[in-house]
Each structure stands twice: as structure tokens, then as C-alpha cells.
Length: 296
Image 1 (cartoon, helix red, strand yellow):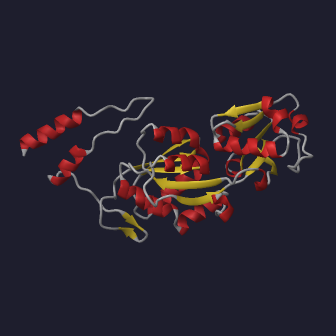
Image 2: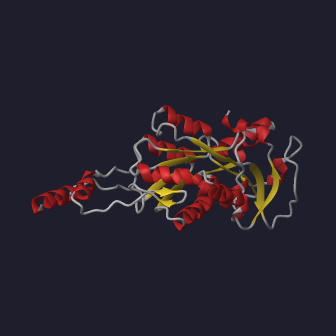
Image 3: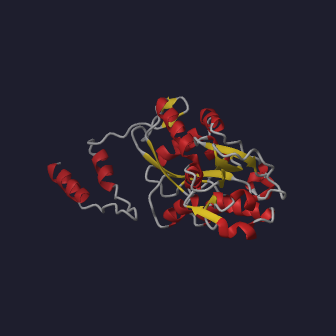
């Protein structure tokens, strides 16, 4: 027994490190060996009524999630813990950045995407657990300004003169090339016939949260962001709402990754994300239930 334990500890000490710019999966067979030896206990998974038999309780999972879901997700994780669920960590960023990390092999348990195309890409690469993909909710685009602006509510249609409203400032949006919020904003402006005139005046941000902050800090007089980010950000005023007909559906998908480090715990939290308790939290933060059209 002492020889076996020494061998396992030595192997564990030789595990790969996690580097700043890339994540390296740590071999987990030493933990499995310790479990078989009775030296590590593996608790039970979460079910709607509380812990059930299986190796979930106490396991931490990592969720790669669109930046716009951060505030609501943290509340959901707190509610999950309150009913006996395990620990949940979030890596929040633009959906495009997270998808590329997954493609590069970064370890995560769940992926919550703010864009159908990026989830399709991960699905087509066979990186999702079969049957786990679920449509959670939807969002909408709004035009925002600092709360102390003199500009009042506006109708967001072809009569809107955004160039005049910007004066000599820039329009804050998430990166319109790859970040979902920016892609939707570009599509809306293209539908209104404004993109060609405004493209050079766009201030691209790494994600929608940063675009919102540019407006909040008066670094941009106007921005196009999600409704949920606008309502959760102080010192921001919503001037108008973009019709959903102007852009692709803002649909949020979640799925378990095929190579999830903690698959049982991931499945438990995925189920909780679809519970009535989680839906109520998402609704309070401004997310709306999905429509059939959101799957197009």
C-alpha cells in the first residue's frame, strides 16, 4: 500500500502545469486510483430534490459562458448551491473567444453560447455531448447612452440619424466581425441601410460588457448592446429598441462538452439551468423564453 501511494503521489507531482495562455488537461487517473484505495471520497450528484447517488457533490465544474450572462449565472449558481448543488465556476468572455478555446482543447464542462452559429460550429466538430444541446433563452438589442445625456427616447428605424446623434463621437459595439452582440448590431444597421456610413465610426469592444462600459464611462456617446446588459449597468439609459426582424435571433444555447472533466456534475447543473428556479432568475435579469423562430 505504501509503495502504491508513493507511486501515485510521484506521478501526480509530474503533472503538466496550466500556462497563462493555454489550458492543459491534468491527468486524473491518480485521483481514480486513490478513490479505489478508499483514500478519496466521491460524493453524490444533485437532483431536483437534493443529492442523489453518484459522484457529483463536492466536484467543481467550469462553465464557459457568454459575457452577457454573467450576472444572472452567478445568481443561478448561488441558488444551485442553496439546494445542495456542487461548486460552479464561470469563464466569461465573448462567445467567439470561448468557442475557439474549446476548439483548442481548453478543458470546460459546459458551453453557454449567445449565438447559434458558434454553437453549430462546436456541434459540427463533435465537441458536444450527444443530446445535451438546449435552447435556454433569448435577448434583444437596444441603443444606449450615458444616463446624463440630454437625448430622449428615439424610434429605431430608417428615420434615425445616428451620425448626427454621435456628433464627433464613436458608436460602441462588440466586435462586429466575430462577437455575437457586434454581429447582431452590424446586421441591424445593415438592414436599416446605415452600416456603410457608420462602419468607420464604430468603436469595437472585446465583448458586449466592454461595449456597455465604454458608454457608461462617456468614452462613447452611444452604443448598441443587449437589453440585459443595459438594465444591469448603472448610469446607462436605453434610448430605443431594435426590432428583432432586423437581425438574426439572439438565441442562447447551452450544452455539455463531450470531454467534460466532471460529466456527472456537469449534467446536474445543466438540468438545473432548465429548472423553473433558474428560469425565474433569468427572467428577472431580462432574458426572455425562446421562440420557435430562434432556432432558424
